[in-house]
Image (cartoon, rainbow, N blue to C red; front, side):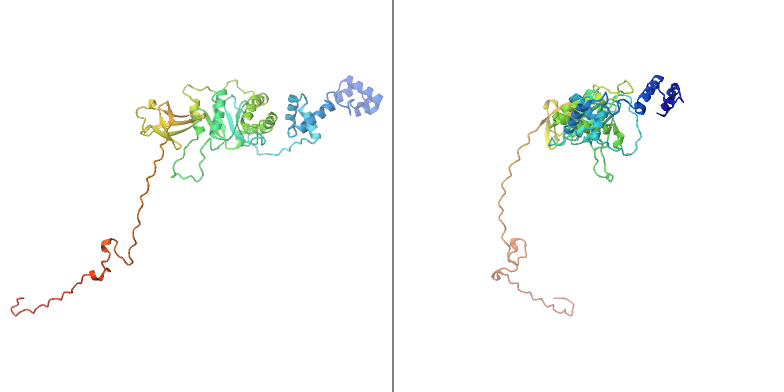
Length: 434
């Protein structure tokens, strides 16, 4: 305004004013025309106080806010904008939704707090080079299921691709099921990045006594990873595997609301939504292009048996009758599978995920049959023992022949006549003793 007033007073040319204002000469000429005809208010934008030509209108804003209040009150602006576009055909920019929700006090931004600083780590170059693996405990079904539901997830470090499944617990078996699904989809990764939970490694207490019986040095999952040729890295903190930790934070917002919209109430329904809708959406929305086009995943070799490795495995000794014990029950090896030197031999027993029980000896699998335990023998009737008669008072001996020896019948007592000692005669003079 000051510059244009100088042009109006004749102190400055329009070309010089255009140079100072960074505008074209044509636009300065137009502004001078407004200034002369309308005064200072002519310099204000013509849409000031009016609705934008690119605005959505009051009806769209009202409808969007009604939907957000009724259904998506706990949604963030980004997710709310996506849901409005995909399910209600209201294509509104997320920044516009944020301003609407902030103005109506539906959503308030959280203040950023300074957290502990962790050094940034570059992504791996290839898919399958490193996979982060963890479990999240959260109310995923928002109380619609009576049993707790856990989410076990694997995130590729190079691409952020998600492989996950809901499970009834964070057990070795459920984690093996996820690993099985991952290997069938992509192949064997080079390494996995996990925490130090008890299903991944043996955590001995600080006061562990070396004189106590030895505990196993590896868990079932660690053994399975070794058999499949997959390395493992143990994270010292949750931030070390931050990619999978942050993904759980995103899923606790988006996946929970998606399950709510789908009406999932059971574990199977939750997995169906997760695999059919959420994982493809995650890949489209959050996956990254790796730095290298090479794929580090490796296929299974001929000597790999996925069902055998992903089992509960222990060692048992074969008895002389070609049976073995497994958790309190006796199993018989089929007669046709019996081989020499099998008695007293150590065999590998596998409890597979599908419930099958097999034994492995010298590279061959043996079928086990549950033995019917014999009925317990009937206990013989106990003999009636006649109690002994009480001994008379004052009895000293332990056997009957001593009874009455000291205090028996006076008539039967034997009188002992005392013997009078013989007097010794005095010796004769001759010294001969008679």
